[in-house]
Amino acid sequence: MKAGVIAVQGDVSEHADAIRRAGDRRDESTTVVEIRKSGIVPECDVVLVPGGESTTISKHLHREGIAEEIRAHVAAEKPVLATCAGLIVLSRDAKDDRVDPLGVIDVTVDRNAFGRQRDSFEAAIDVEGLDEPFHAVFIRAPAIDDVGKGVEVLARWDDRPVCVRDGPVVGSSFHPELTDDPRIHDLAFAPEREVEA
Ligand code: GLN
Image (cartoon, rainbow, N blue to C red; front, side):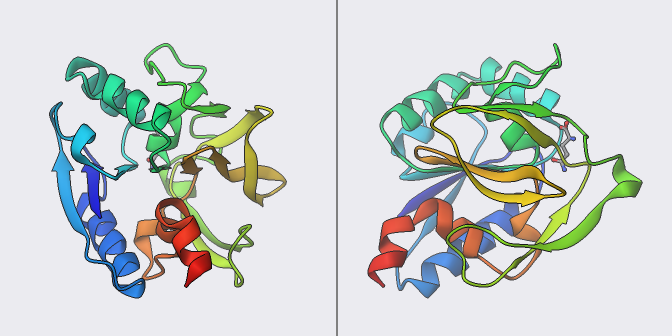
């Protein structure tokens, strides 16, 4: 499997490690490449959009022509995992003019709804498809407000959706790369293979 991690900002190497760990668990060899320019997404089986600053990431994706490639990747039903700022960038509406969202996750988001940097927190949350709770780390995390018809809510915290699936795309408000647990990466990138195993 070839995995591409958008490498503008955020926990690029932590995500790459989690993708490799998830691959090891399935006995699948995984190549991880960093994406800063166009031309690489079309070669990838799966794509990850990390957290960071959604304004910066969104600008970069549009400027470099990567935004269109991600849309084509999703239209081809290939998996994407978007975390925190990544979720904001891939949403339908971020309710902020400084973010030009790609609209591949049919949700609206409220940037920083879960507080500023000092308000970051951790919580064990139940996630649909995982047998044990997942230890979720929230950092200036967005909340998901309006969920479109075709979107499945996989997890909630404080009664608000924090992890969703829209077709081949999984979005999470929290940072699954900050623990040793690769189950969210698995959930996004190998749902059927997991079941078969
Ligand atoms: N709230 C940030 C934003 O709007 C995202 C924070 C994060 O990715 N940890 O971009």
